[in-house]
Length: 371
Image 1 (cartoon, rainbow, N blue to C red):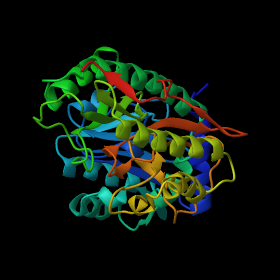
Image 2: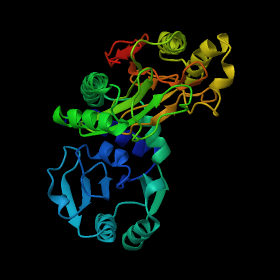
Image 3: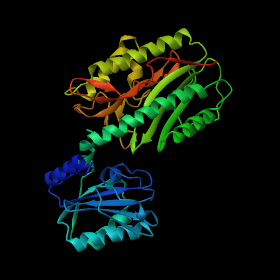
């Protein structure tokens, strides 16, 4: 039995809804989430396509990576020595099999114009219709295979944050800390890790890739840590102090935790992400920090996670997406406050029938590292 039968059934249903004979998925060197949804294996090739119909699935990659073991959703793999060559193979199979007259294109927003022109020229009189938005909506609800991978990644996130706390001490540079965590996560099975960091006080307005700044006693040290396992990312956001926290740091963290707790208490099927964002922001407003709930000081109040670290839905007060059972997201009231600078706090969770389950198990507190 195909363990991806649930996923294939959803993709076939999408074909019916969009009235297309098949779906063509594209992955670039920058984003492979849509490709990996259709062909759930690592694809080291910089470019890749998967052509899926009700009868078969074909994965197209640059040589020499075309010889990878195909996933259960794909019956054959094809390779060429250049991106244009790969595109030529895709168009050729469409023409040979007479697939059409309409094919849904997923990932077309990142597909290079020249590659699409090559496919179209070889495929002939076939209409490629955008289907990225429709698949993105479907992907917000995870199937059982996806949730299993996400639970595994959540364990890595917890282990990774424990390594982060251990690595943080005065005199160390940000990039040294991140190198320790990255190396540790690889040794325990992580395929990738997206990570941001910041350290300091009221001068810190956000997180960035690691710099050469040296940690000092009294610093806030914050991170957004997002390891990948089985293709799926899980994110955890935490803040710590180097040495005992100051009263301002304690008060700031208390606000952040109450905001995150308000989101967790509200999340369940039928609630909109706008209501979740509003619940977080209302905690800040009640403390007199409403102006720091704006785009000037924060980007989002959370987002979906999955095959990409930052998926839909975006948690913001003007987004009316309705939460459904099986959605996976992080609710994080990350923002700047004048009390002690930028601070972060949040956990990946899955929406359940009656509420939500927090998947990351790291203690929900302000951590204190050796000062």
